[in-house]
Length: 306
Image: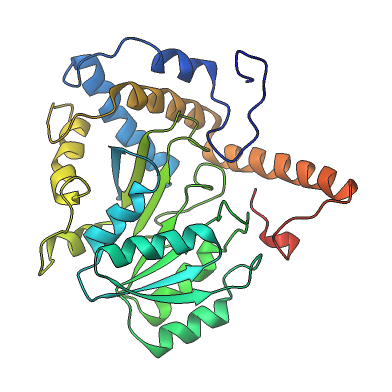
């Protein structure tokens, strides 16, 4: 719904937030160990599995922007000197590459022309040329609006390098674009709260597969981050889901309460219906743009994000 001043916010994110989410975010904060919050946080972690369409993935909810997700993936899943293949479709792919380099990872850039999605044949050729620890895909790059076919690209990675970890930046996509975490073989999927999840900025959400968690636990070198260290956060997430208090760093209590409300609303609708609503709205909006003589950055109408 429009903001109180009557203005309609029409950017990728922050987006418009439901009044029920804003109401709970605006309330006085309970303690992070209050029984009511423990219940809400634990339930939220469980609901995120349903939003991400996973039965075995481990959600992490950490105070920070979506960009923290790059750090979370890079510092936990890559060791110094290991290679990451960046499938580059825009500005935010560039930023992810810079983040990986900060953790001493080696970056190989698979650059697509502006407005083009990742070419499956180019990905296949790159994977046959050399080994990678992780492949980095962006489902929709905010800077270009280009949508990648994650299902197809992930299947190529699994076919050629089954030991490789498939990681997806879905900041501009998750909870709007379909993502079948388990069925498509995703190992890490990251997003921020302020877009399709429908919560004000300030939360990073990442889901890791059991394969990714094994990679974290079997490292030969220390994780080069304190705050983004999955080994620190995993017992916290597990404790809250078991409805027990635990502490590593103070969680963003009011935002997590907002996420609790937002997840309930998404699941009340049903994720398939959520995806369908976004698709229909997108097609109508883009049709109106085309009728006015406007064009998209995406060079193919089929790869324009919803």
